[in-house]
Amino acid sequence: MQAIVFPPYKNCAPRPLSEIQKRILELKRKRKAVILAHNYVCEDIQLIADYVGDSLGLSREAKNASAEVIAFAGVDFMAETAKILNPEKTLVLPDRGAGCTLEELCHPSELAVFKRDYPDALVISYINCSAAVKAQSDIICTSGNALDIVRQIPQDKRIIFCPDKHLGSWINEQTGRNMILWNGYCWAHTQYKADELLRLKEAFPGAPLVCHPECPREVRSTAECVCSTEKMISFCRDFPGDKIIIATVVEMIHRLQREIPDKTFIAATASGRLSQHCKNMRMNTPEKLLACLEKLEPRIELDSAQMDAARAPIERMLEMSR
Ligand code: 13P
Image (cartoon, rainbow, N blue to C red):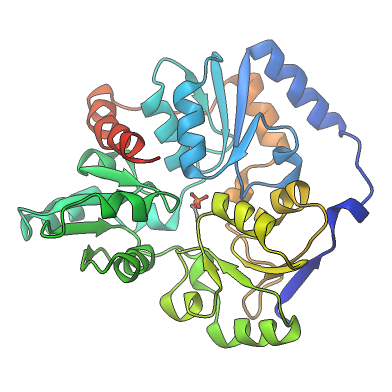
């Protein structure tokens, strides 16, 4: 079976904080820092973070953070977004090498050339892109607000959507648009196979399948719910049954378990894999989080003109999202 079964959290023995977790919390107080963590980072970090959430929630938290230091457990585009929204803060990331396939697949110079073919088009970029790509975009979106944002754009306006072709095709399907799609994808979400997921559903009759919109269309078509990581929490909470299949990065299950302790979560995996993971998110270890709070390095530093150019489309996203 291509899955890992996580039993209801209420049946799991509580774990005391480890030495390293205690040291991180101590140092966090000393540094007057806040720890923001994405839903995909390891459980040990999620448990001591001040906020755990999706890209949209993290952007809002970062913008409003009053702490002197933001320690961002996530990947570089998320930490860069936080810095752009709150540039006075010291922004540290446990591993500066934690990137994103989507970001790698959309080089700013290629986007600049691509845009020349569609001079009247609006550029909406998924937040999973570099600051330089954001700076060339009109509006940023996340998977949590993409539909909402695209629906606010007049029907006759041409849109270039980059860099995720799968998220883009999902938006096209849901809104009836015909956006021009950049040819990027997320490694982790494109590993799933529709036939394996259908077999998994047969093994757990009645359990709905929830997947992220970064999954390809054939995979999405097997799902009862396609949504952002934050919306997975509300879908699973509201679903009346007690078993749910999740097709996204496996660490998502930790938050689902904590917030919905009476349900069983089945984490789908793709053939040949022990678990569905994101190698970049896995670079966030408690040891590296401790070290970055100790040294206040590695830091996110960006050119201020580029930050100004990238801030406008991010702020537009925040204004346009409910
Ligand atoms: P969410 O905003 O839904 O958490 O997605 C982030 C992401 O990078 C998914 O791969």
